[in-house]
Image 1 (tube, protein in one colour):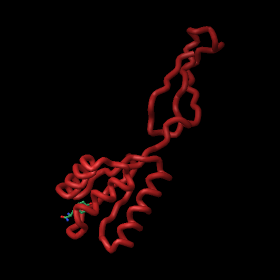
Image 2 (image 1 turned 60 degrees about the vertical axis):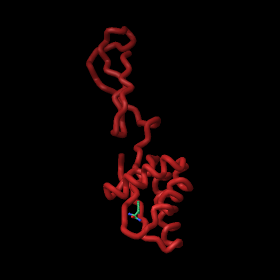
Image 3 (image 1 turned 180 degrees about the horizontal axis):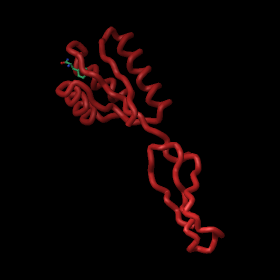
Image 4 (image 1 turned 120 degrees about the vertical axis):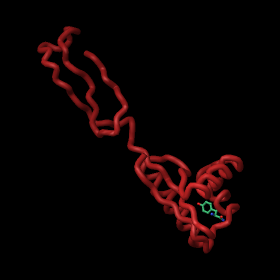
Length: 122
Ligand code: TYC
C-alpha cells in the first residue's frame, strides 16, 4: 500500500493508490481511496485593521494581552498595520479565531476605541 499523506486544504485526502505491486491489494485498479481529514484543521488569520484614532500604545497592549506577543513583536505588528492598513495578529482554528476577534472588538468598544479586527481563511 502506498501512502500519500499530503497536506491539503480539502476535507478529504487521498490515502493510497492501489497499484497492486505490494501484494496487499488484490486488483491494482489505481483507485484512490479517501478518509476524512482529522489532523489538519483549516486555519484562520485574525486581521487587525488600521484606523486614524486608536493610540499605538493601546494596539500594542491588545496584541500583548490577546495574542501573547512580546513588547517587540507587538510593536512590529502594530507598525506594520499602521503603515499597510492591515496585518496578521495571529493564526488559529476557526473557533479560536472567532473568539479572539470577538474579545478584541468587545474590548476596543468598551474602551471607546475604534480598533477593529476581523478574520479570514488562511
Ligand atoms: N494608526 C493609529 C495611529 O496613528 C495606530 C494604529 C495601529 C491603529 C494599528 C490601529 O490596528 C491599528 N494612532
